[in-house]
Image (cartoon, rainbow, N blue to C red; front, side):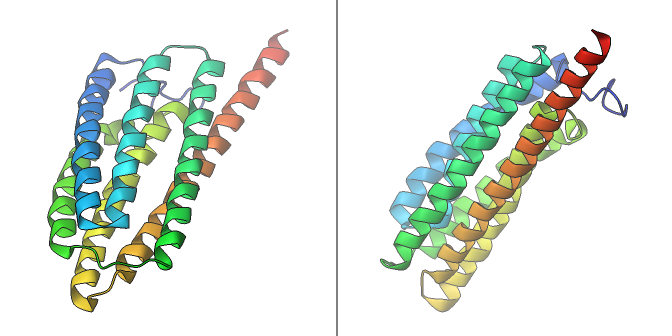
Length: 211
């Protein structure tokens, strides 16, 4: 993989292999969004619905990433900034809806949470394996990796939440996991935005130096 290992020029996604892998991951994420959101609704699980929202965000993120591959540094950093802001908003929405559920707590269906969480985990492990060799790219490429990593962590957390709901017969484990996932969304958002801004400043400084 050329360009990934250099310290000066980071991999920018211009690779047919990378694009093929990204298309597969988009299809996997879009499918799991529908499955998990439906299951989360019927299971009354906030954690499942938060994870489903993450799947949707990832599918959109990967689509944007494909669209700007090979574009200017400004276009790529703009895309990364948009993805970072969307992750931040997603995290705030999950936090808000979780706080709402604190005052209106119903006990989720642990069995549905566990089964769907397991299949979602398999989907995300496949995505992570497909993208792991490209994890150290520019802000646009790295945002794809961070979203895939978040999904895998989130699925493990959902399964722990299902176990907690089953063991305690309360909805609190589900709400706690949803809040943790919201924190993860926001942490990744700040990482993506910080790297995108740094790359933009570096590009502008380079342009000024050449002028």
